[in-house]
Length: 353
Image (cartoon, rainbow, N blue to C red; front, side, top):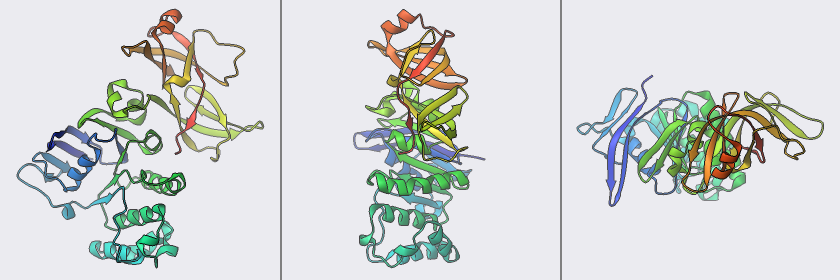
C-alpha cells in the first residue's frame, strides 16, 4: 500500500517547516515534539488548509504538487482539533446530522451514536457538554465524514485526567481496527507511548527522527523532539497474573517484571515506560537490594552526552533498554559493546495516561 508522501517547505514569517518523508498509510503515527515544532502546521498542510508549493500525495492520489491543489473537502480527511469546534447553534444531534448528510452517511449515524455512547447527549447544546463529551462528539462528527485519513491535533491536551480516560480507549479502538490511518499530534510522552505504533519527531520545523515508538524514545539523535523530557525506554509486555502479594507479573522477551497490581486482564498486552535515570547497571548480579526487577542484559552501545553523563543501550533478550549513568561509572564498570551485565529497574510506569 502506498503511503502519505510529504515533500515540501512551508514558510510562515521567521518559521520554516521542512519535510521530505513518506509515512505509512496505516495504523497510528504520532507527530511528536515540543510546542512550536511545526506539528499543527504539518497537519494543516496535509488537510489542505495551507498551500505549500511542494508535493503531498496519499495512496498515489496527488493532493498537491506545485501545479495541482486538491481542495480540503475533496481529500476526505477527518480533522479533530484541540478544541472541538462544534456548531454552537445546533445541539449534538444537529452537529452529527450535518456531518452525516454531507457524506451521505445518514444510515450510519445511529450506529455511531450507540458505539460512542452519545445517546444521552443528543438533545444537549454544545455549550452544555463537558470537555470529554464535546471531544467525543467531535470525533464522531469527523468519522461520519467517511474519512480516508484521520488527523488529530492534540485532542487530549485541554482535558483533565478523567476526561482523557474517556477518549483514550476510543482512539485505541480505532487504531486496533486498522481500517483508518491516523496522524496524532502530541507533545506528551505518555500519550504517544500508549497510542503510537510509529513516531515522527519534529523540532524547530525539522524532522529529528522517524521509527517505531521504542526506537524514537530511546534515540538521543532525535532528542530535540523531547524538549526538556528525558529519554525513556518502552517495553511491550504481557500481563500474566496478579500474584498473592498484590504484584502483577509481566513477561517480555527479556524476562519478568513485577509492578503493583494492574487493572488489566490476564493475557493483555501492556506498554511500560522506564526512564533512563531509573535504570542502574551492575556487572555481577547484585544481592541484598530492595529492587525487585533485575534483568540480564548485554551492552549494545554507549553514547557520550558531552557532560558527565552517558547513555548506555542494553539488549534484554532483544528488547532495548536505555540507562543513563555517569561516564565515571561506565569506566569503572568497564562497559563496552558486548559486555554482559545486569539492569536494575528502580521504577516502572504503565504507559496508560
